[in-house]
Length: 164
Image (cartoon, rainbow, N blue to C red):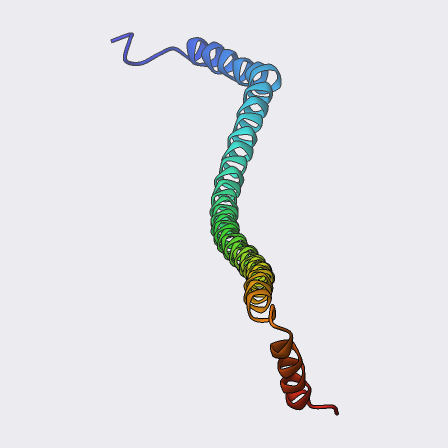
């Protein structure tokens, strides 16, 4: 039964050893351990705050990214629309210019045709006049071989001539 009921010296030395151990642990072990735990706890809290801030920033960046993507899509659509409008305008201007140029060419051709026609008609008139004069001179030669006919013809033409 000695083990169940310890002696006074054993209790005293055990208590003294325990108190010295507590003192030494408190002075040299507990403070650094507690300090390390506190630093660790602060580091963990700081990391958690930073992680939360990073998550918040990520959410903000996602919203900003979506906003910029939407703006970029809108700008792209506007540029495409503007390019199509410019293309249509250029095509229409080219068509208009082509029509104007074609009209000028047709008008020029018509004027040329009219001028050529007038020139040909004038040439025909001259040729007809020359032929008429030649024919008339042959006829007159034959008819006017007699001297009385000449005087008669001159009198006839003088009567027909109208002096204004």
